[in-house]
Image (cartoon, rainbow, N blue to C red; front, side, top):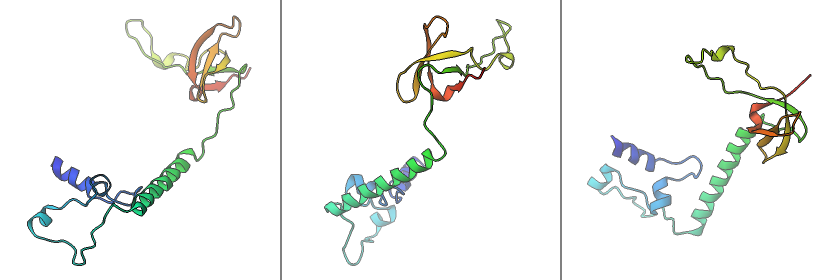
Length: 150
């Protein structure tokens, strides 16, 4: 079954490149079991060839346009975060129950105490500090944060 699945994958037209993986990587279409048994080559002899520069340019342009479509679909409805250094925020805790400590995760607080953003590490991560002492407590992803409203 594994060979059949690999054959089906390699001989199927790929949505992003508009060509088959075997034509891209091997430079030719692979033969089906029926084609190996009988000669089913095209009558005109014009088999697909990857030797031309236009073939590769077309495949690359198809791939770029597919990437653009996926990126637009992924970014739809998303907006960049608005957190800045000095903002007071709370981060979402990862709740874990522990029978040995008699702790039930459902009853724990889901959000931390208020912390201050000390530094923006990169576009998605920040360093959080204690607002009273200024000591950095942890790093957090912006998806785990929410603004603290007094």
